Amino acid sequence: MSRLNIVDFGAAGDGSALCTKAIQRAIDLCEKGGTVYVPAGVFRTGALYLKSDMTLYLEKGAKLLGSDNAEDFPIMGYPFEGLDQLCYASLLNTDGAPHRNISIDGNGGVIDANGAALFAQEMKEKKGKRGRAVCLRNTKGVTIRNVVIRQSPSWCLHLLYCRDVRIDHIEVHTKYDENGNRYQGIYNGDGIDIDSCRDVVVTDSLIASQDDCIAVKSGRNEEGRRVGIPSENITIENCTFLSGFGVAMGSEMSGGVRNVYVRNCSFENVFSIASIKAIRGRGSYIRNIHYENCSLVNRDTSIGMSQWFRGAIYLDGFYGAKEFDADTPAGADESTPVMEDIYLKDITVETVAGYAVYLCGLPESHARNLFLENIKAHGQYGLFSKNIDESHMKNVYITSDLE
Image 1 (cartoon, rainbow, N blue to C red):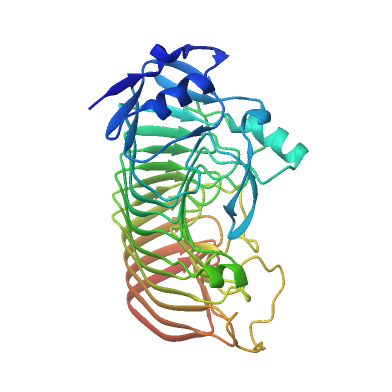
Image 2: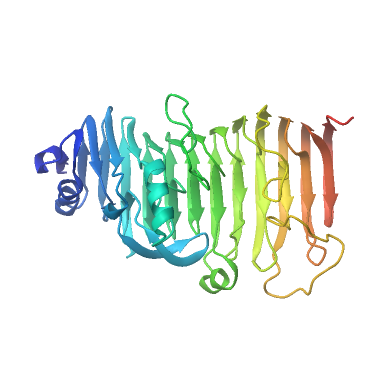
């Protein structure tokens, strides 16, 4: 198979010149099954568009560094936060047409979106929603491995309408650089967003996030229900999480979320292991969700309990609401979300922020069939449970700082 070195197309690896045209030329000329090779060096670039049946390979010491000029990231129309809207292009993109067999591979090479610089410009211009570091859409057969992805203007790795995805041995950093310095000004900096995708495996990876480390999503409200593409058949295992808010289901989940397995993962100075988030108006379901053999130790007091965060393990039918009435039902219709069949087993929690376990369904749509087994959890607060039907607990030990 062919291998095209971007340097041979005029890309300069000293970070001095914009290499967008040279790199894109290599991608465009890459034969089916071929590789575009990024050698050691810093290659500054605007938005790049990958295509089917190719590998982008980043050698050790290679860095694709996003331009600090928002003009190098064209405005595109595609879903973000569950709704079709205008967005700045990401550093690495697909164009939205159906694609297949795209690989981003490497020997520890870095994809750095230069998000702190772009965030300020994109928020000031407001021509569209902020871009991602990597956004792959409508692709069957995605492999991402052995690379570092960092510093996105918003979500770092966004997979949308993809299937047959394998993510292995990657690092995602959206909060700090490699020297521990905080990226300034970025918020809503999720690590990985799995958005209306199916058959996804994430293994042996490290995520240090400013927001949700991994979020499983599927559209918002009426538009999401109309599109109706669920996120399903997802496995996340043997991963390490070092900051942020753990593995979340929702809150955009109007196409449905089901059959998600989180196994053998460790969470250090992360605020939550599991957050299952729904809102009136979303409709659809979060169903058959498993967290097993996971541990959390959080000593970070910078975030307190709020409408966006309830505790280390939480299910929240009122996500985002500062004030709510958990006793008075609203009318149930197609916009009423369902949360059911949630399994948590062999989990330890030690946290200084929020509840150890917080479970609150809607009064008109109780969460159903919650199974907690072999849980030892200590939090600032202990256990809160309301609007839950058929809760099954075995060997559950919950304590709080107030006891």
